[in-house]
Image (cartoon, rainbow, N blue to C red; front, side, top):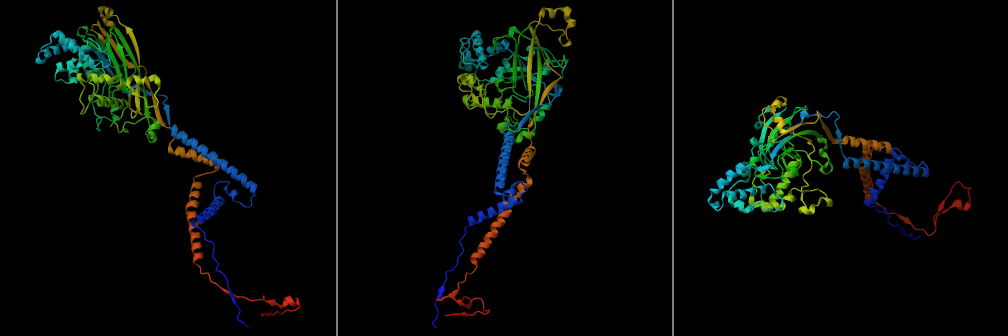
Length: 569
């Protein structure tokens, strides 16, 4: 029999699977397992094959709706936390005024240059060879131009001398020293003083210090020096606010001053009114109206003025420090890189001073000195007049300032966006009550016993009386804090998610476990199985090829035989 030919079958290869397909299969399997075993109610019904398809659709719609509701509520909670995270509450009982520093009080005569002092200066200047062409009357007229250092408005007056000509007449001089020597002294302005019902020498209560109106008599002004020091030092800190004069609420408590106006010493008025300017400011802030924390009132002769002070204290918790500055809109004392000890008033003052330094290369004499920067003199008056109105107009930090501010009239003002309010501060409000005095009646010897002890023996002609005191026993006290702390935020979010979807911290751990550890383990297992299947040997086999298929006897003879034989042809 001839050898039968053999037929070779092709090799059998498994269809190749990519890594992406492998990962997708693993994610699908893990997702089903997660839904079946998750602690979140309802997920197991989505993959339960024993539940009808229609019920699974209902469960899916319910879970999606609950998820949307939870996300919306959580978003609303976060929005409320980040957009309005602070709350200001009022302490019902307030705080005693005896625990608050009394405001700084400044008294400035409206006559800013003493006639006696300027006469002595004129005599000295006439001795100089450069001034030999002037006589005493002409020199006095020229020295009247010193008032231009106070009045920097863009006006022209025939009565005022050319500032540069006067600058040449004065020769070498220091502006601050010159104006200090020409200002009427406190001894000539203040007659009698009393503090908290105790008569005291006015020189013990008042200092001759610089303010925005020049040198004035100041009470309880606690700034260390006339130099604006923006370096980091330990001279000023938050504990400084525990010191200073304090008062209580009572009829005769507070500061009382008897003022006298010497008409014979009048030479230059910065405002066309006879009397004195009463200035009120924070004890540690430079008395400066454009910088804030400042109030002023004019007192006329033969007037008794009562100033009622109301204070409000705002204390901010350090818990708000994590809130963005743009959201809370305030700064703590140690939070600004612009100043070592931050206050809103000092920030505004520095911003204005740097603007004038940039424009005129100097600072006006009625501002604190800056290290390394010269004080403006009469030769700089022209430059100061150009930029003075702009320097006292701070542009609000708005993209489009309202047109009613009329900033175009002052060259747009100046921008000080870094100067935000102080988070913790004391604000003062003042109420002024004036009563007309009759000097003749008060000078009558018969009324001497009706006077208070600190006023006995005084002459009330050309005088005024000022009484500054608290209007009430308690000051308003406000606390500023976050509307919710971080654990309150998480508690609210957890409660919302737990109520709507049954979501909890355990659910987070489950999700992380299934889709990190377990998913990684599943992918690795499938990859190892695939590699093992790929490396297994695939053997080929040969099978004889016959012309006829095998025949079985059962096919030929029916089922009567119990024995079958296979015949190969």
